[in-house]
Length: 113
Length: 113
DNA sequence: AATAATACATAAGAAAATAATGTATATTTG
DNA sequence: CAAATATACATTATTTTCTTATGTATTATT
Image (cartoon, chains in turn cyan, brown, red, yellow):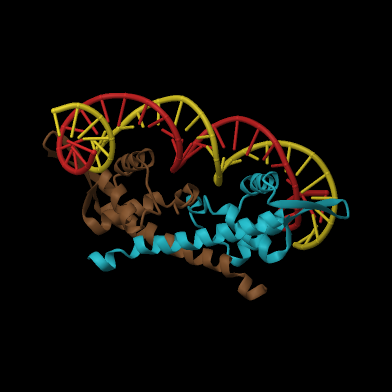
């Protein structure tokens, strides 16, 4: 089972920031694989969604990049800036709170039914 | 604090379906107020988002409508169809699973850090 | 040698919400 | 009782964001 893409909407930026916070630095392809791995293939981030997101994070000053060459192939590593780190905390706690709020909605029938 | 709107994206349809499942029938304005109430004003559904969603649910055969007149003012009540009821169960359990998956991502540092 | 995996990227189009606007009735408040 | 607010529907232009498709190139596997 793969989650319907609409569910992933709005959480992609938070997922990426959180992974960067936990792993110091990561490159794009690595992020797609990591997400697949830790979600048991239930969330698959497409390149068309990921790269524009990473570029936006960089434009916003939340991450900085660093190129690495593996033979002739390039890897672009992304690393949180101090601003990025505090933004990550904000986004993560907002998402946690949001999920708690959603739980209230999803379980509201326990009180009213 | 109001949740950033991007978080609500993708969950709106599920929220509406779940409220209808718990309340038998509801009208649009009532839904916006109920969501405000049970989330302590943290989620506010705008009309521009809600009405198109309700119309889409109707077009998909998940809800049926029923007009009520309060004096000269009209209320359009929405009610789940049998298809709508089973769809609601699907969407709710998908969202619960998604949130569990997100928890794994958000807490992954407990294992790796 | 051919295929699959790794690794970046962009671009056209679709989907879905926002913000704004519109109409109208009913209720509350100064 | 007039004005403001709340109730209640709806649409539309714009923006945002993702999907799907495409493109290039290297490296590893079969």
